[in-house]
Image (cartoon, rainbow, N blue to C red):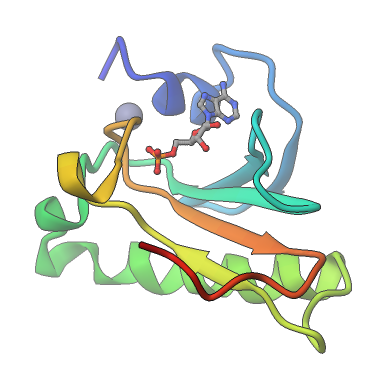
Length: 114
Ligand code: AMP
Ligand code: ZN
C-alpha cells in the first residue's frame, strides 16, 4: 500500500528507529506515547484490520507475539508486565489502517478502558 504510513516505516521509506525487526515484523516507538513505554508492533505485510487476517497469515500473527516477548525482555518489562491493545475499525478507535498491536508498559495501567 503506497500511501500507508506503517508500510512506509516497514519498508524504510520513512526513517524511524526500529526497536525490533524480524523477517515478517517490525516494532517502533509510538510517536504519541500513552504510557512510559509505548511500542507498536506491526506486520511487514499490509493487513488493514483484525477482520482482514487470513488463515494463511497465522505465522505473521505468531511472529508478532514472538516480537512482543523479545521486546518485553529487551525493555525489562517481562517480569512486571504490559498491556497489548489492538483497535479495530471506527468504533474501536483505529486511526492507522495497518494492523498493529500497542504494547503499553512502564507503570501500573488503569483498567478503565471504555
Ligand atoms: P490506532 O489509533 O490504534 O490506529 O493507533 C495508531 C497509533 O499510531 C497512534 O498511537 C499514533 O500515535 C501512532 N502513530 C501514527 N503515526 C506514527 C508514526 N509515524 N510513528 C510512530 N507512531 C505513529
Ligand atoms: Zn500498510
